Image (cartoon, rainbow, N blue to C red):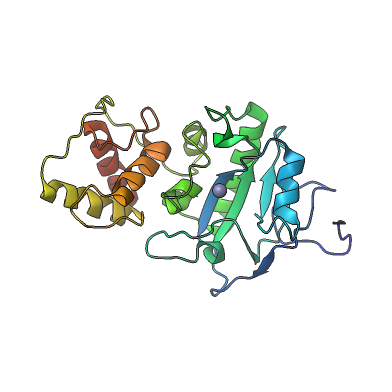
Length: 257
Ligand SMILES: [Zn+2]
């Protein structure tokens, strides 16, 4: 793995000299090249070097456009015009090839390997914010399409986790946060199949790959959990309590406004 000096990857001006670490895991985008989604991840690795190995080598088999290390240094691994391999099996708003329409940012964090996902450091979050703002501005990505890996793959993924600072991003116009008035209480607020169907429809309208089964099936619980992790992180339990139902309505209103 050696940095190619005569190749300037398409990407952010925030990537400093010597921070281009080319991955061998990429291919041409399979759509018309349109980029309209930003996907955030944690690496779930003990060290940044190990994350870099997974994200750049053939044996690792995955990649992202960017990796932000624990100190907030931004590395670029794949040129933005290329399709990086970070989303896996996923869906959002009916689109299943998330890798083709997105930019992927991996953030060094040990993740769910520990009992509690470690906090993201201040310098690291500032770098995440700056890079996200740069990307969403250049591609005019809607706030509602700045997403967690767990949003697009709710049955498989938890990253970047409930401790990720979405609030900081939203304060700078990146992504959306909502503030329900109801306190989280973990008490199911959905009483009838019609109410559940309505909730599932709202989650699907937001973009989640939710079923409209009218039943509290495993996918519905996973989607509610993913929603909470991103938009109502005070209690992530998969239970559609009053606060969660309110937060879903608030998000839908914000998207449709
Ligand atoms: Zn991920």
